[in-house]
Length: 211
Image (tube, rainbow, N blue to C red):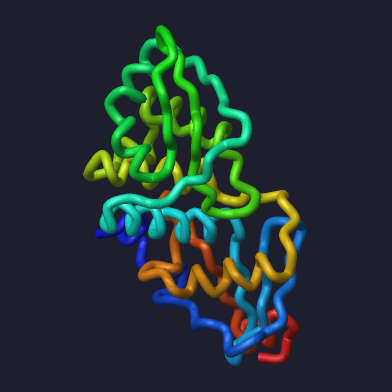
C-alpha cells in the first residue's frame, strides 16, 4: 500500500469527514489548522498534511514524466561528501524529473541552476541538501521505500513541506486543507503519523459533563 496506508485512513477508524463548503479556518500555535464541521471539530497538523500533499504531487510528476522548474536568478554551488556525491550521481536523473537542474562542477561539486517551486515558502537549496544527506545516509523513512521513485518522493515531501512553527495565511491554510482532502490517503503523512484528529460534538459534550 501507499506509505502510511498500513495505519489506516485516520486515527479513529476511517477518514475524518471533509469540512463542509467554506468553513472558517484557524491556525493554532503556528502548527495546527482547525475547522468546524457538521460533526464537530477537525484538527489538521499542517506539516504532516503538507507532507502528504507533496508526496502525492511528486509521485504524480514521476508518472507524468517530469515536472516544471524555475531558473534560479543566482545559481547555487553545492559541495557534498563522497557518499552524498555518489547518491547524487545515482539519483540525478530522478531529481531532474522533479525540476532540480544540476550541473557537475569539479570534484563532488554541483551547480543548482533551476529548481521546482511546489509552494511559495519552498527553500530549494535547503531541501536538496537535506534530501541528498538523507538519501546517502539512509533513514527509517527512505529505507522503507519500495523504489527509488518512492525514496525521492518521501524525502522531498518530508524535507520540502511547511514546518510546524511557520505562520501561514488564511489563504494558504484553505489551499492546504483542500489539497489534503483531494489526496487518496488524507489521514496520514508518509511516516504513518496522523494528519487529522477529529473531535465530535458528542466527545466534547462528554468532556464537559453533558454526556
